[in-house]
Amino acid sequence: MADAATAPVQVRGTVLTVRRVDAYYALTFVAPAIATRFRPGQFITVAVGGSANPSGGPASSMLARRAFAVHDVRPDHGGTVEFVFDAAGPGTQWLAGLRARDVLDAIGPLGRPFPVPRDPSSCLLLGVGYGAAPLFALAARLRERGSTLDFMLGAASADRVFGALTARRTGRSLTVLTSDGSLGARGPVTLMLEQVIREARTEVIYACAPVAVLRDVSALAARYEIPVQAAVDLPMACGTGVCMGCVLPVSGTDGVTRIVRSCVDGPVFRGDLVRWDDIGTIPFDALGAPGWKPRGPASPAAPATPAAPQTRHAG
Amino acid sequence: MTVDMRSRLGHVELPNPVVAAAGCAGNGRELAQFLDVARIGALTTRSIMTEPRTGNPAPRLAETPSGLLNSIGLQGPGIDAFLQRDLPWLLTRGAHVIVSIAGGSVREYAELAIRLSDSAGVTAIEVNLSCPNAEDAGRPFALDPAAAGHVVGAVRGNARYDIPVFAKLSPDVTDIVPVAAACVSGGADGVCLIGTVLGMTIDPIRMRPALAGMYGGLSGPAIRPVAVRCVWQVHEAFPDLPIIGTGGVQTGRDALEFLLAGASLVGIGTEILHDPSACSRVLRELEEELAAMGVDRVADIVGQAHVQRRIARNPAGHSGG
Image 1: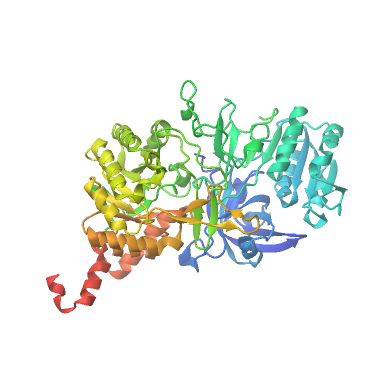
Image 2: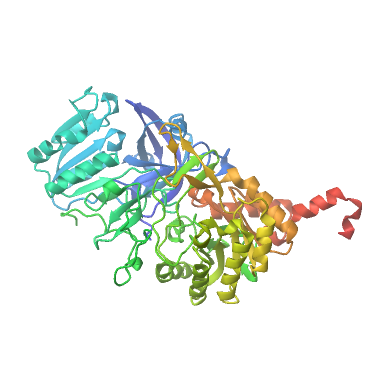
């Protein structure tokens, strides 16, 4: 499917650090094979609660791999990978309890990365909570190409705004909104979106946020004819495409809606192609829905993948 | 010492007894990133139906202690796309392919058997009997021995004579032996034991079922003892019937347990989600276990737990059988 230079690999990586970042944790581990293949927007999965290889330790009772967007990769130790998480469940609490030199079973890089415009563009990077983590590796890539960056970060409270300092340093502007008003303006992150788009003359939006926010961002961007690259964060169990758990309805460029896997066909999708309001349902007109009948010649045989996500500028 | 790992799937010889179970190996491409699909005994495809199918709404998966509940709803591209795209790819990679088929009626199963018989390279057909029978108010075929036997008969009657037909049975029955017996009468060349166990979990925070489909199939190590029991019972009743033992295998030692219970092949399912290289790892571990035990051929230990139990119960008479 993918060639050896980009195909995901399964590694046993040594943990370097697990540190607190406000309300979250950031875990860095050594994985040169993942770090060198990584492109911004891609994710990794890790086995939690014990060894994925029971002969290497006690078996875990938690069978679903946990998926995390990669925050950053660095060249030290041959290549390290960092991801950010909220220790909200037993799997992430186990991760938070890891110490330096522990071993982590990791697979990556997985999924489609953010497409990057060829020419310098005015880019808006919007993230909610620790979901903003993948935006910063993207920001570095965009800056290399001369794009200007405006950040919008949202969260429930000040300690849940991720990356405000980095955003302030690398962006032309930063707009912060919190639900309780403890940092920045009070309200949902979309509250000031229109204003930011107008002032920044935004040409492309990159968004990592809950589905409801991505829906609102995509709807507003459509009015301004701005392309949106939206990274969805749906629950996954494997991350490699076999379990079919992380599905959502997406229109292809052929107009046919398919139920696609966010792990292999995403996690980055064109905001205008995702049927945001139908996530968690099977739209009646989706290919293969109950009562669905083929229209004309053989669309079933067309690739199950929607068109590759592209911006207007994509090269 | 090397162990002879060659195993039989009906009359077909496979390089080893480790099989990727249906629904856990995608259609091969996903797994091929992590292992050589030609090196495992066989790869079972996702269950194929005649038409494309969206499956159930999300959430489709929930994690439970040592288990996974799923309600995918047989999402798939349909037989046309499978034959055009997925099967040829698997064959170019040299995989032994067991094609799992699913239908809402006996007729759909028969049609799938005909389509698969027309294409080269199908190692075996696995009949997924856990699908709702549209002609019986959605009751799964596998719960009714007569319906299960009827489906198997239709598949066996329409499949090419040299393609073995295996029936995949559900453990959600009072006694699995009569269902296996009906499949044997229908002409099954073997059985695959077991499919998932029907289960449910409720999200206490949202106060509603965790899965959109309410119930789901439980898989993983949580159901391994149920699977071993089913393999034991069916092997006891039909000592010569080939069995693919599937249910919560994580290690070579787990695979050994199924072989001892009477399975001649072992399916790896949910563990593939947890560890995509599980099939090659389990194969390696199993070979090491067998070598350490001094076993020359893996076929020699199939059903050995039955033999050992008879010896233990009747030490004097064991030479007489």
